[in-house]
Structures are given as structure tokens and as C-alpha cells.
Image (tube, rainbow, N blue to C red; front, side):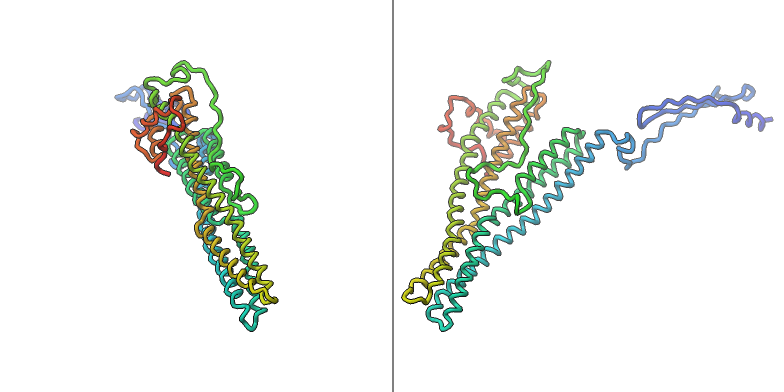
Length: 416
């Protein structure tokens, strides 16, 4: 009899209710009806099951069917991988072009000095024609080599790649930090793509064509960041009146805004202009040496044609003097790496231009709650300028119109 009742217990119809929670969690309840003849301590039995959560390691796209957020994450991850690859490429090419500078410098000087020695020995040598021809060929080769090297400026190319490597690694770190700590949106992906394209344009990998102009007509700061889009003015029900800062809001105060405006003014008047003016001097010197080197070597090559012809005893001396001067000029230009110095000055001017635009973009946002935190922003600016946060207070008075640019003596940055 007991076995029959147990059989009826399991075969009796059951009712169940299942409430499914969105995506990951649901609760299912099952109630088993007990025959009236069976005495139990409970009127009914209930079984509660928690929905098994998805296994760890399953991509979010498999759970939500490829939501826009997961697609943005994958795109941003691809950008980070591309930035790492670009950094490696620029590092390899930079070392290669630095080797170019050293090898071409020494080989060109060796050609020039060897040809000068041959030109000096040619008048007294029994095989004068051979020495004269050899000196002429070597000097002509040196002139062509100098012209080609002066056109591409290997030391400047190497500096471009070194700076590009640092900036690509900085971009990669920023993108990976964004992937780890924030919710990725479509706007984040577009901003990262703009930065990638701006870096590609600022520091191209190809040598020809696409190489940056080595002797530009006007010296401008290097630019490796995209132009910021103008902020859209939105109505708000809170925050300060436009043009003024609250006493306390997101770390921004009126004093901090004045300090930032003073820094912008000092950068425009002193730091950026200083690097541009020195860059113009270096560019002019480099251009003069780039023209003088091949011209001297070419003149020496022409002088070798007159060695041993009649009373033209001056030809040997002219060839020797021209070759020696060409080697000296080549050493000053590429041994001193004037192209690298010019690129370094352009990059430093661009560094201060970026600080200036970052501050202006922050101050242009009328809603202080939408800005980056004031204390954090001030700390970043202080670190970029090589100063402490307390040092920034001295720039507050520079924002006053009563202070003329001629009265500004100190520079904003101490790092460069």
C-alpha cells in the first residue's frame, strides 16, 4: 500500500510556474501535489532553481547577440593592436634611418677625402691620367650622394620615427586604459580613429612619396593630434553663467580658470615663439650647408679635368681645397644632425601648441560638470610643463589685459 501511494505521488499531475528574468537570471518554481491520503509534515513541496549564469569566458556578443557596445569594444581593441604594431614599425624604421645617417656621413666623407688625396698626388705621379680620372669620378659621386642625402635628411627622418614611436605607444596605453576602466561608446571609437589618422599624417612611414618637407618655407609647430570639433552649446538647468566659474564645481574655480588663461597667454608669447624662432635659424643654416656641400664637391670634380693641362697648376689645389671643404660642410650638417635639431624644435613647439589647445578646449565648455575634473586637469598641465601645481598660481596675473606681452619674462614650461 505504501508503494502504491509513492507511485501515485510521482505520477500525479504537477503545476509549475517559471518567471524568466532579463538576460542572465531567472527563477523557476515547481510545486508537487501530494495525495490527500499521504500524511506529510508539509502541505506541499517546492523546488526553487536559480538560473545558471552564463559560463565565464563567453564573449558578451554571444550573450546579447552583438550589441553596439560589444562591437565598439572590438573596434577599440583593434585600434589598440594597430597602434602597437605602428609603434613597432616606427621603432624599427627609426633605427634603420639613424644607421643611414652614420653610414652615409662616413662613406661620403671617405669618398671626398680619398678623391682630394688623389688630386693632390696626380700632378707628380707617372700615371697622372688614372689618378685624375679617379679623383674626378669620386668627387662627382660624392656630390651626387651629398645632394641626395641633403634632400632626405636621414637624421631628421630618424627623429620623426623616434617621436612617432613614443606617440603611438602613448595612444596604445590610452586606448587600453579606456577598455579596462570605462564603457566604450561609438564616440570613443571615432575619437581614437581620428587620432590614428592624425598620427599617420604627421609621421608617415613611406620615404618617397609622402615624406615630410625637409626645408619648408614657413616653420610651423608639428601637429599629431586631430583638430577638436567645436562644442555644441546645450541648454542646461544648472551650472554657472557662461563666462564665469562657480565657487566650487567639479574642481574648477575662478582662480583656476585665470591660471589656465595665463598659461595659454605665456605659451603663445614665449614658449612657442622661442622654439619657432630658433627653428628658423637652424633651418636657414641647414639649408645653406645643404647647398654648399654638393656645390663644393661638384666644383672640385670639375677642377680635376684641368689637372696636368698646360700651366693650370691651380687645378690640383682647387680640387683638393674643394674636396676638403665639402667634407667639412658635410660633417657639420650631418655630423651635427641639424635636421634632427630642426625636427626636435618643431616637435617642442607642437608640444606647447597641444597644451594650449587642450586648455582652450576645456575653458570653452560652458558647463563645468562636463569638463575634466579641475584638480586632475591642473595636475596634468603642471606635469607637462615640468612644474608643481602650486607653481601655476603665478600665472593667474598673466591673464589680465593690463599685463603686456613685452612684460612677460618667464617661460611657462621647464621641461623643454
